[in-house]
Image (cartoon, rainbow, N blue to C red):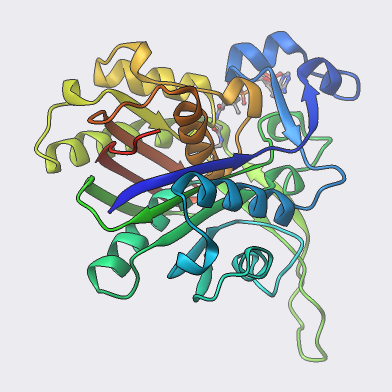
Length: 319
Ligand code: ACO
């Protein structure tokens, strides 16, 4: 598999830490020190599907492809306004694709799961060109009076087009059966037979537990995929980690004994955009011309579940 196109889209509404401090007992200093986040983008007028379609179109353009060239669409998403049809169906309709499509929910690890699925579809001969769109609005999952969660998130979408190739050197995904550290629940339509009590529960997070799990799983997964790829950690040019918190990124770098410069980040401008964070960062770096042919990249993500995943690939896309 190889990545041949990237794209991203962000809501226009920028919310700074000082804006949050107008209605929450928080401060720019607290948020920046604990998370690195300075501002985030929030969906206001737009719908998430608009961002998803925008990112998808940009990735197709960047790959020099049209929707008719795509054999399969995978959309990674945790929450959006539609329960059905899936977000991938809405993207499919907007870009006028003619292939099958599916949504997956592996929380913030969705991009790595989608890459692994794409590789499996290609290996099985079921698809050649695959559009992966990660589109997320975690700001609609949190309680906006809970300062310990709502300051962390932002909305956005990132997309890639992949085709057959040998750039992907190693990939792994895991699940640790730790469902209590990060959870949100919603009430479904009532039935005459549903007797159990259900409740709308905004996102509840055991922050320190998530932090520890994120650092240890990312260090473990990265070491494993780099070794599986037949490489040393020092061979990797850039480690693109899920952008949840700058301190998690820094801790992982420290535990791997790798220089800070190898860990690009943009969490300061977007907050945690769940599975969209790595493809958004990848697109930003690609647009800036940071990625050169032959660069070795490692991705690592973690999220509710507790899902984790990592991969190593060699960049071959000419800008
Ligand atoms: N502003 C000011 N004070 C706050 C805020 C805030 N926004 N939020 C919490 N506090 C207070 C708490 O109430 C607490 O006060 P107390 O000591 O009077 O009780 C104090 O700050 C310390 O709270 P902790 O939760 O212990 O703070 P911690 O240092 O652990 O930082 C944080 C919290 C930033 C959430 C940290 O635990 C973390 O980064 N965890 C990982 C979170 C994460 O990355 N989640 C997403 C990953 S998975 C995914 O992407 C879905």
